[in-house]
Image 1 (cartoon, rainbow, N blue to C red):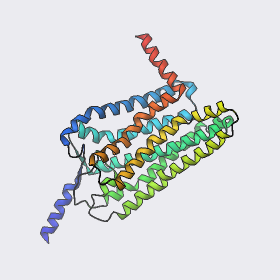
Image 2 (cartoon, helix red, strand yellow; image 1 turned 180 degrees about the horizontal axis):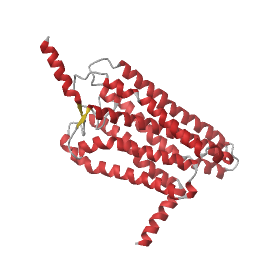
Image 3 (cartoon, helix red, strand yellow; image 1 turned 45 degrees about the horizontal axis):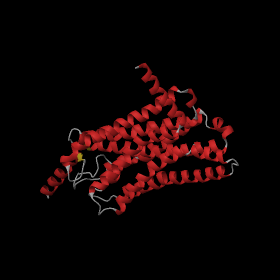
Image 4 (cartoon, rainbow, N blue to C red; image 1 turned 180 degrees about the vertical axis):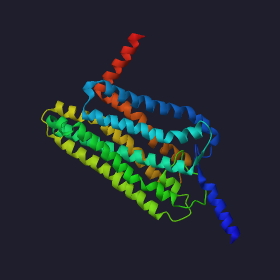
Length: 320
């Protein structure tokens, strides 16, 4: 009996930390990912930083649509920075071990900012609906106060929804393998290593997905049904195209967020026979690609931002 207790304590003692996975089955290839990952994080900071700086400097961009874009840019940077410590640890310094509490903290921020991003995309859909449905009252409806309240509501919802997750993980005993399957900590990934029932964790995770991400997706879809109905009621073809064109950037941002999310979910559910490399690749695309591509999409599709960025580069060129 005494030996059993001692071995149990020893097994629990090894779980003060988790082991993160870089490239599955090929740890010697991890350094090859250092440069691409460094480039992605640099592009994320430069792209979103440029968007924020341009909107701050140009008074003509101080409109509700661009304020929501600022919130999206800040969320993208925050989400990327949540994964940065563990990514650098693995691919740059070859240190895959992460402390248990650090893993739970990272888990909270990754899931939290994911929910925030979904909420911001819903807010931007509402912004486009108001702009197209009632353009004359657009600025009076979406005042600075209303936008601030929406931002606070989105952040508060994310904190309240994700707050129980660290406690649900911390209550579980971990006496099996402590090797996670990704380069960062996720609730569903850590949960599968527990040696006790995870029914509560699974149920809560499913509730979060359905009533946040799932519900948000339905609200965005419904918003665009109403937007399309309004646009089809506009007599002029040119005006219809102009109205739809203002939605293209947001539609791209929605697709960049939800398509990888659906892909990761489907692979976790039905792709267990696939190579672990595929799982890792999809998980990294889901978190790293949208923050890189969102600023590019908005810079290309939004004329005011594109012109302003070109002006900045032309001024610097003339100074040189």
